[in-house]
Image (cartoon, rainbow, N blue to C red; front, side):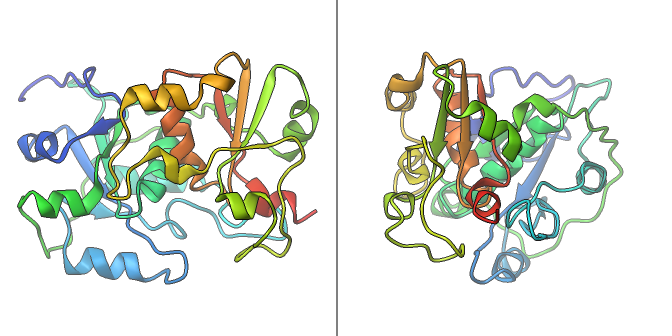
Length: 282
């Protein structure tokens, strides 16, 4: 595909084969989002060792979050202006004569961190974003080229247009979670939801009224998204909700459920970015 960019066929996911076919396209920017919560420098080292050619590294803590405080959760949303600068340096254009840049995000954690960028870009008003299905492992397994050279900064122009209705804060959760038209979704593992274990936050349990939809159910163990029909069936019980509020531990893996809802064609879902780590801080 050359010349004018028409990404309308892209529905939040691309295959390794599709990305390989379009790897040299000037209207695409690739973000390596690999990260390990308990080893926060590992993802950057993995990128430095090997990555998809042309990819830029975005760090969960430094790029896709703000520093944590007493409240607001462990991964508060990043400063939109700072993230916009980083996206521009990747060559991402929010507007251009050829159309907006398509951002492809990948990780090796069943979309946990790539989904955070996918959601953030939409929150910033940039709908042209998709996740690499199967992640970096699928790219390597297909035998596609890899690079050891960090990508050089570019000069894109990214202007955030915040879609504030995509997120809710703790006060909005308190006032809306018990309404009959609202569903509150906890995306963590069942044991954490039930309060049987809590490996990260100081208090175990869940927000009263929440139902449990573990984020790992969205993908296979190999990191591929389950079929659209399964995504649709998964949310059937909540499909009539006027609003779905999704949270996890710190507003990261909840984005995998938001991706699933998007794939299922359910548009009225919002992120509680502070999530359980914010809720239990009070």
